[in-house]
Length: 156
Image 1 (cartoon, helix red, strand yellow):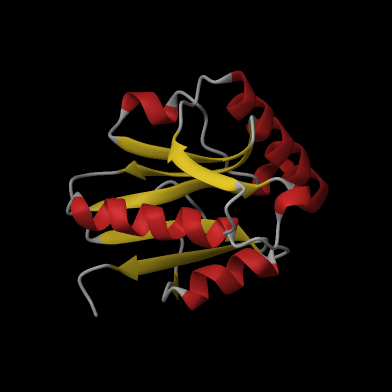
Image 2 (image 1 turned 120 degrees about the horizontal axis):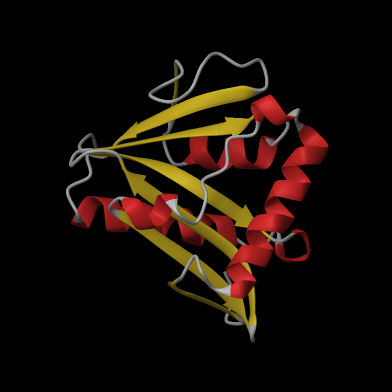
């Protein structure tokens, strides 16, 4: 990620974050049917322990990602998204690294996530960081458009 980008803790109520969520939802709607879209909503980040970060380019929020802690030992990576014009700048890598670091510092031992089969860049990123394919987990059912991953942070 180059110097024109700044990573910081985000607020899901920020108008720009809400706009980025809408952009992400609109993008995913072009790839998948409604029943295959599983977004986290702003409220999800408020009702449970969570961590949410954003990436800024000048005054514009161009990327985000977060983790929803499901209990005290595992969490789900949600809302990983980078605006189309800012992709290929390692922003997703920096967001994921930050989430991994926060999780380790907060004794979250396992991270799980769901992503879509038509997002090869996301799949490649997760696999690069050691996420392994798993069966659907809590809150999900088998879906031909989805793949599910897990990373055990206690393993070297």
